[in-house]
Amino acid sequence: MGTGSREIVQEIERKVKQTDTDDFVKLITLHSVPNAMSIKQIEAESASDQVLKSVRNSIRTGTWPKGENKAYMIVKNELSVIGKLVLRGTRIGMPQTLQNTTLKIAHEGHPGIVVMKRHLRTKVWWPGMDRDAQDVCKRCHACQVVSQTSNPEPVKSTELPKGPWQLIGADLMGPLPSGDNLFVVVDYYSRYVEVEIMRKTTTDRIIRSLRRMFQTHGLTLQIVTDNGPQFTRGEFKDFMEQQNIEHRRVTPLWPQANGEVERQNRSILKRLKIAQVEKRNWRDELSDYLTMYRTTPHSSTGVSPSELLFKRKIRTRLPILDTTFYDPDDMDQEIRDRDAEKKGIAKSHADEKYHAKESDLGKGDKVLLKQPIENKLSSNFESEPYEVVSKNGNSVVVQKNGASYKRNITHVKKYNEPIYDDSEEPIDVNVESRETGNSESVPDMSVNSRPVRIRKIPGKFDDFVMT
Image (cartoon, rainbow, N blue to C red; front, side, top):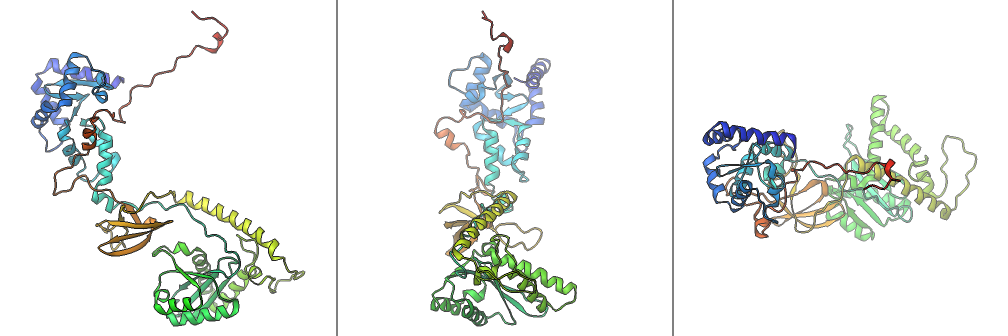
């Protein structure tokens, strides 16, 4: 038992000797009893609590039956009895029937786990109190709705396609101040970029643009887009089926899933802003950027996009010694190794930066769905929980009232059913423990006995025979 605990017990004994029991009980009531809970109520419940009755008897007699009340026995030197109350230092040992009421009172104002524990520890105690307080905080409906979003799952890098123009990503950027929009298409193998300027962004206009690109590079095997209306209409679906192209749409509200094209959008937008600052024609600046980008070795592959796509070097205004053709087979493995290395480094940095961790969500779990923030008082999540229908990688499909939504894992948060609400009586958080008959067998993890120093014989006596 620590020095502080010893002094508390001695102070209690001194006050009991100097004052009447009633006066001391009033003192404890003033400083330790939770608001809206009377000392008489605690005494009445403590008198009928079988565990506390056994503990009181053990404290008075100094005998602790083996295998009983283990959670109390490990702190027996800190326990004392005043009437029907069991005290641990100056904290009241709460009977089983009042523990949930105490937790509900302590969570008024919606403190966090640490604050709620600290508040409880100043007044009351029972075995497993910290665990119960933590459970109440995690299951509070209001606290969950306004809590922060979940950490993302570890990055899952896109596998490099087998060859050029087999997997492409497409996206629209704009409108620009001129009223124009940019239709950006990126080849996931070579990182070659195609950009077309268009005034209208209808599905028909997107299809005509893709037809021209397919005339130059051939049909792709798969195209990845977001969920914009241009890509979800029936005309686009029919066009993809006619060309035998698989159309994959990324998770809604998660543009990172189409990372290559989103990265190019940022680079293109930067050059357009530079043109605006320098008061130059942005169309000419865009053309210069694309020429430079297509003929410059990419950081991931180490080879220029045009060289990977066309299997030859493109002539530019910079001088070149020769135009030697490369053997595609020799180049491919080197590109794959370099690409895997760069993606591995990027994955490691991203996972560390965003504290990524694997999600434990599964089918049937209840989750809260992130909602748009309208004002300073808007909650992060919708109030009513959804049910997880399926999970694939870092995407989940949730459902409520027949409506289904596909979202990234960071847009949902696992929901814990409240222990109580304002309209119902508290649900006993310890009912499972009581049913198994070991409600006091699990000690409060916040209670630690003093560490014991390991005694060893000094090394200089190793050669001596000790008796």
